[in-house]
Length: 132
Ligand code: HEM
Image (cartoon, rainbow, N blue to C red):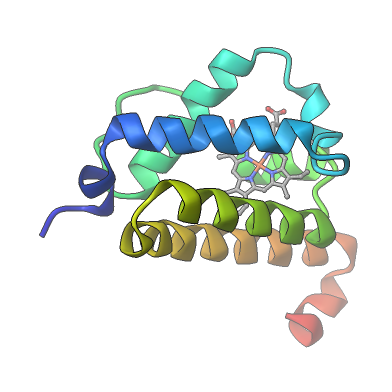
């Protein structure tokens, strides 16, 4: 069976990522942490590659991802994550057939859950087992 990456295609992965981040940048709350990004074409390349590989495509960039560290440094919060996921759900459903959007969203939800766990743990390790 074809991986989700191949079903969607690299051009369409890039198109969804590009549209999503243009909405992120225009969002009153979510746009704020993204002001730290100075090179948007590079950021879009990295995010397109991230999703391509996460959806099962072949790696083609040598970028060293530091997802945990970068999000904690960027002011990640569970409230911003909820906005991120809602905006991404809307964008994916507008741009992709339902089945492909849902396959992509399932992975986004899972990564979101991991980021949430790391955030709570970093705030107070004793809360992590009770609140997640
Ligand atoms: C499931 C949700 C999310 C996913 C899958 C995701 C994914 C990513 C990835 C893969 C990167 C590149 C990291 C690297 O180059 O090492 C990144 C960067 C970034 N993300 Fe997220 N992200 C999510 C949610 C959020 C949220 C809620 C925020 C709000 C603060 C956020 C803010 C940022 C910022 C500001 C960067 C750039 C950091 C830098 O380069 O210094 N992300 N994200």
